[in-house]
Image 1 (cartoon, rainbow over the protein chains, first blue to last red):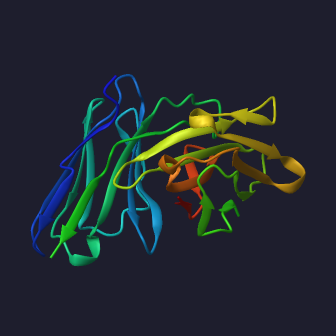
Image 2 (cartoon, chains in turn green, blue; image 1 turned 90 degrees about the horizontal axis):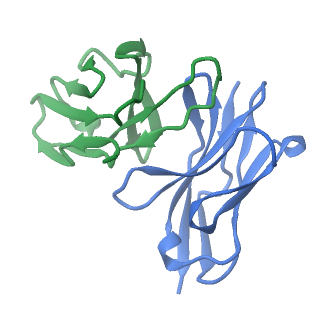
Length: 118
Length: 111
């Protein structure tokens, strides 16, 4: 398995531009997570999908952020318009969650997308 | 409230020396515990996990961790570190569908 694949690895854009980050989870995994990592706030969960349905988006900072999972093999995180404070590394992770075992959820992470907003 | 504490932000050890990274958790139920490692510019990789059974768990790259319920701890150890172990290490507890993360400990290796 190629693991969780994220693109682009690096993105530099100007304030106000739209940014789209992409993720291909591991085949067969039913759960997908988007995280943001910064020095100041560490790892923050942005949104969680289970079976392609958004379950918890309470971590999405504001309306400028949106995420979709149109099918089991693809997800996007979009920022529109982008701002300098959105500069961070964005990680996608997937897992095969067994619903009846709470907490026993092994996440596999992608390599991340480093976003710089000028 | 559920939380994970990694008291050491940075740890410096000499190559070949032993290592122990501390992790304390606060969780009301049976904890599912994890250690992940993040090398510079990379994603997080699972080192090991504890779900049940033997409280001493072995992981990849020669790491092990011991679950101590009485101390609410899950410390990570390695008998002899290599320069390639320089990375950031994250402890986490599974809470429903998500992981509650510690702030991470950055390991620096002295030659």
